[in-house]
Image (cartoon, rainbow, N blue to C red; front, top):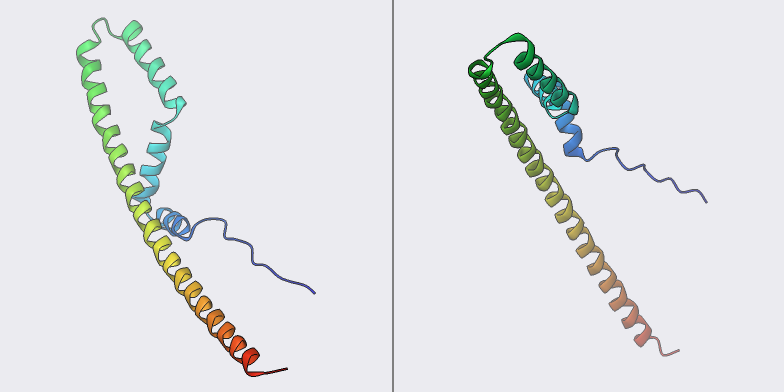
Length: 133
């Protein structure tokens, strides 16, 4: 007796759909790359090195310009963080919607199976009581 089982999907269907959408949209790919780099230790080390060189070797009074540059960079990076949060919230909502539909379908299927088992049990009980032997 051989049974075949289907391998579970590698990712949740919402994850797969999101990855496909991101791969098709240039803006999302760029935002993903910037967010991935800005959230890395390489980004931190690079900034520490550049700012140290700038303050120690390039400018004698780096503070006004450095403050401007850091403020502008913070504005842009916070925008990318918000973009990432919005995309994550949309992903979580899509996943929750998908899971809700799947759970409702499973609940309906289980309810139908329970009703069938009840009907079969009732019929079996009726037949056993009807047969005197």
